[in-house]
Length: 546
Image (tube, rainbow, N blue to C red; front, side, top):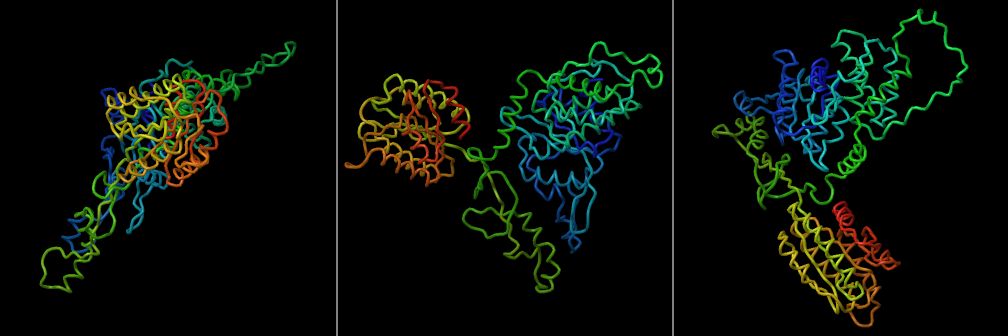
């Protein structure tokens, strides 16, 4: 039996106890076959529901049944998806894009086992199957992932039959799994308890006491996918060789094949070590950091007056592009119909008042604009300017792939010039970089001022802005005669910080000095030294800040 089949049978054996499965798999026949296997593992008639993407709260948790309410003349509620799936399974497609609000509601119901309502508590004990189709930095919400016992990757599975068979009962499995969870840094006590439940379910399926094979299955399905560190190598035994072995008669006092706690823990650690391919811990740590930072900066979900994805409703008035939600408005008016008909007996139809109006709340993912401010003065030197061009071009290509906009400002001589207004055209951006001239003074304050003006204009369009400044930080031309160029540049940087513009300051000097650090502090920017050209490292820094 493969781990995929075992996971399906374990979930069917104790759906509410295990919480569910995080299934890492791309859409296709393999995943469809596994979902069919899961459905067949449950008894006939078990509710298996698929949660629509962007499901509203009233469909998820239950809400007013508009048709029944208008027909009966009194409020009647309809059960939500969670109550309908009581005793069964809810399949969540594209779980890596699940809104935080929906994830929080699912986690709350998973913990309570019921859905609160005006008529009391409705039972809702179910298992979740989160279909994780994420790539790169996309991952399922941690609030749900930590509550689901089994994490399964269909692209990387081990056969349960490949492990050493060991049918002997293992009374020390509880302490062993806790020790392995601690050795792997695998999510604390919740993950250890989930591993215990999986081991017990595996043993019940086989009709035996918990064995080494059940402990190994729990490690593969629960603990290893959550590992954040590699378990330490086992220390060599230090017992002296002359120590007398136990007498043979002692083996007859108990089962000879019963493993000790140390032996069971060592087996479980070896299973975990075999499950961790090289580099998986680093990739998982980076993914967790990116997932924790999701929803911030570029790509953050922002409210939109007229376009975007529906994110609930609010009471309000029409006008200024507000979109009326007709169904929710009728739901708000329906309970009051008997009262209003007594006040207006001659009226017909549904009586709606202004207080009943419900306006759609819309959100959309904010697009970003990256403004590159490049020092084209003589102090940058032709070689350094060429290195900066290469790094900027790499970032421009990456921004184009994400369908974000880029802009380019160059400063040299007596002022700054917007060579490339915000655009998505990669070819146009490359031409602007190729034609970038060099030489002259360093009017750094003028460059920062031009970036601030452009950034404010872009922010006014609802886009997020990241300004990337590439310079050695040695200003020698002020905006007005008689001013200290460095003081003038720091004042321009302070203005950018007060305007709320996110910035990255790339110090391109061969030997960074204090000027760059002072300017970065004035701008509130992240300071990165670039003593050597490394376009890949520079791109990573800018993407992390965006």
